[in-house]
Length: 473
Image (tube, rainbow, N blue to C red; front, side, top):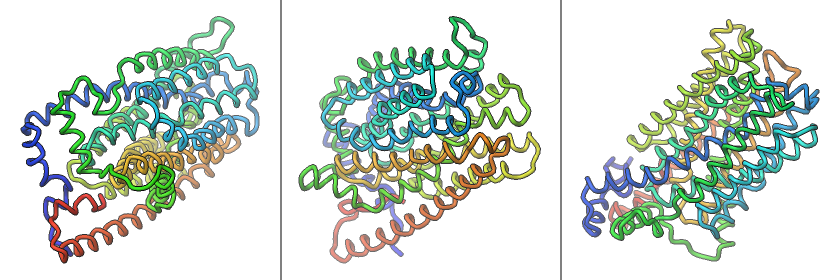
C-alpha cells in the first residue's frame, strides 16, 4: 500500500507554488481570480439550466392543470409524451457536443436555448396529442447540447478539485427548478383567461421567460479563458496552465481517432450506467411527485406547493455535498452515500406507511438522487484527459443518464396510481445496480493507482510528474 501524501491527494498541489510564481499570482490573488471567474460564468449558466430543467419537467405540473383532459391523454399517451423527449435528447447529445467545438459557447448555448424557448411557447398552443409529442421530441433535440456543453465549458476553466463544486452550483438549478416549478404552477393554476387553461399558461409563460434569458446569455455568457476580456494576460496564463497540468489537454491522433477512443473507454460506459441509476429514479420522482402528493389526499394546489420545500432542501444539500467532496478530494464515497439515501427514500414509498412518513421519504429520495448527480458527472470529468475525449465522453455519459428519463416515463404508469409499486420497485433495482457499478469502478481505479505509483517509484519518477495519471477516487 503506497504511503499517503499530499501529491496523491491533489495531483497539482506540489506545482501550485511554482506556477503561481511564474505568473506572479500569490494565494490571495488566486482566490480572487477564481471568485472573479465564478461571478462571470456561474450566474448565467445556472439561470439558463434552471429553465432547461423546468422546461422539460413542467409537464408534471401541467398534468394536474387540465392537460390530460384537454389533449385526451388516455392510457399510455402521457407516458409517450414524457419519453419522446428523452429519445431525441439522448440521440443528439453526442453530435451536439461535437458541434459545440466549432462554435463559441456563448453563441451555441444561447442559440439552442432560444430554440427550445420557442418550442416551449408553442407547446402552450398544442391542440392534440400528436402535436404535443412532436414538440416534445423537438424540445429534446434543442436541449440535448446544453448540459454536456456546460459541463465541458466548466472543464475548460476549472482544475479537477475546483470543478465539482461548480457543477453542483449550476446543477443545483435542477432542484431549484423543481421548487420554482411547483410554486409557479400554483400561481398559474388560478389563471384561466384567453380561452386557455392553466396548463397552457405554464408552457407559454415559461417559454417567454426562456427566450428572454437566452438573449441575455448571448451577450453575458463567456467563452474560453484565452478570449476572456475580464482577465489579464497573467490570469489567462495561470488558468490555462492550471488546466493543462491538471487535465492533460494534449491529444494524439486525428479527431476521429480521439472520438473512437472515447467510445472504447469502459469507464465512460460504467459511469453512464451509474448516472442512469440516479437519473431514472430522479426523473420518476420529479415527473410524478405532484401526482403522488395528490394521491396522498392533498388538493391540487397544495400538492403543487408541497413539492417546493423538498427541492429547496435537496438543492442546499447538493451544494454542501459537492463542497465537502472537493475539500476531501473524494468522489466515490459520496456517490455511494447519496445512492443509499435515495434508496431508503424509495423503499419507504413501497411500504404501507402513513402519508406523512411517505412525504418524509420523498425528501430522502430527492435529496439522495439530486445530490448524487454532480458527483457522478464530476467524477468522470476528473478522469478524462484531452479536450475531444472529454467532450465526447461527457456527452455519452449524460446521454446514458438521460435514458433514465425514458425508463421513468414508462415505469410510473397512470394505471398504477396511487402506489406506483412497479415504478418504485424498478427504481430501487436501478439504484442497487448503481451501487455495484460504483464499487467496481472504485476498486478498479484504486488498483490502477497502486500499480502506477509502484511503477513510477521503480523508475524514479517525481510524484508531481506522474500525479496527472492517477485516477480520482
